[in-house]
Image 1 (cartoon, rainbow, N blue to C red):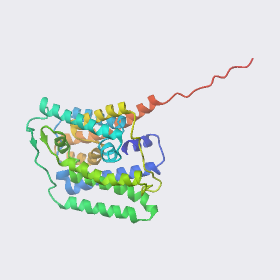
Image 2 (image 1 turned 45 degrees about the vertical axis):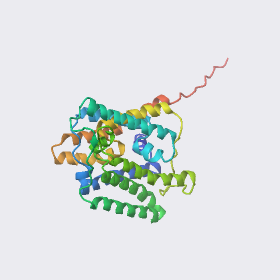
Image 3 (image 1 turned 90 degrees about the horizontal axis):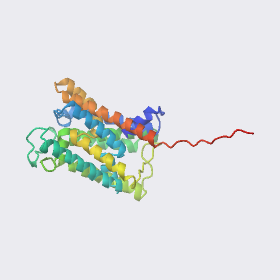
Image 4 (image 1 turned 90 degrees about the vertical axis):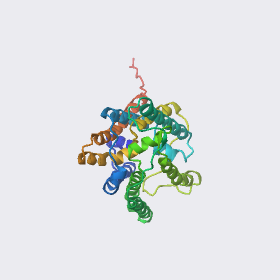
Length: 321
């Protein structure tokens, strides 16, 4: 969503239909991050891992390139592609998970760049310090869903994508997906492993799976709630080499800093705020990495478009006698 919206902005496309709902979703994503910052900041946005700025920068470049070349990340290929039974997604997810896990194994255990204290064991599970935020986020999500369904059609095209962004962001904050260290612990399968995020993806697929079955197989739902929008059906097969290369590149960046595009956008403003609030420079570096993800995605997209464009055939006109 972020990448195609930025592409449209670069092309000065009018803010309607596809561009409108993408913008509203992204606004909801950033707004949900601010809600998590205000009500659940200790759990959603703890201090970023103390890593070098160059590592954050390289990881952001890798994630941006990988998500564009591989056409997806944990949300696109994981939450959406797997329940669609897309062969491309079933190849991509094990690829980027494997590369990310290998990156963690190398940086933490082989080279010990990340310090010590990661001996093989199950990590202590972290829960939100107050139960009110997860419950409030859940109840707010139900209310937003009800508004998206019950409001008149002229309002749905605004409320539906905005609500989706808010719900997604609050879910990321309540689950800990915006905490890079928690994500890196999840990827540390052979070491200090935190299995809790497996339930996040599992529960996400339990929601998206029936939705895709209703839309694609049963044809019970033909259009989204957002007026003027349509369901996107990316190909399920083919173009495997760029897919594997992109997934590997994304997995490398994901393993380096534990951040993928969705949580990065949710965290970009909160991390600037927490960086100002306390003397913690890695928070600024994480915000910079989120911005670099956007820039590298858009740059890669422009390069792919340029080199894949077919030259326009010209007809030679012969001069008369």
